Image (cartoon, rainbow, N blue to C red):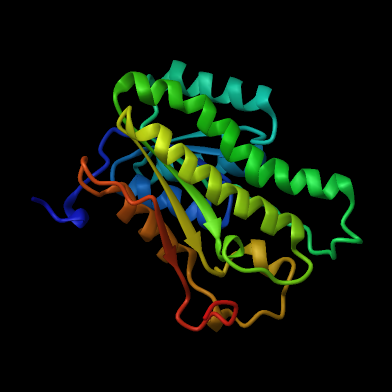
Amino acid sequence: MAGWQEIHLDGQVAIVTGAASGLGLETVRLLASHGARVVLADVNTERVQALATELREGGADAVALTVDVASPQSVGDGVASVLDDLGRIDVLINAAGVDVTASATDLTPEDWRRVLGVNLDGPFLVSRAVLPAMRKQGGGHIVNVASTAAKRAWANASAYHASKWGLLGLSHALHVEGREYGVKVTAVVAGGMRTPFLFDRFPDLDPELLQDPACVAETILFALCQPRDTVIPELTVLPMRETSWP
């Protein structure tokens, strides 16, 4: 049996949400380098169009998709367009995420709904939209990017914790439902990464305590490249020196 490093994704259609930056972008680049037909899904139209063009110029098969993952209409239209244009969906990486740093008493209901809308409603809506196609074609793989925030808590992140705890539960529930149809579902519990998601809010963070998002993308690839009769429902990937995890 071939090792996972030798398995390629040639011709597989992979949608990556949050593809405009950070982990989403690193995942797109890695999957494209392994032969996947990548769909860069993000609310930032200009950014994903430019990135898709850059990838195509480098020889990748890449398309841009403007989508608001918190909107059922936007998600439905976006997934339908991918199926119309590419004919199938083999991989979905739910990597889009937002946060608002505020105490529970200062967090507005609007901010709460925005964080839950992107981080929890989004993976539900996109997974719900792609699952019928995956079931019909006899298989597929959904990867939900969770966080150590789904395992322990810290101050001023109540909406984020709620969204990631919920995402972990959703991922395991989808895992149970998908197996009957050959659809794999994996939750990747990622520790802190050197991405704009953290540095834009916490510019004083020590980058040495964080991991390169490219390393987390490699972990996602590892999960995708397991043999057909094997699935990893959950795995954790941490920086060696992260202080928020024992």
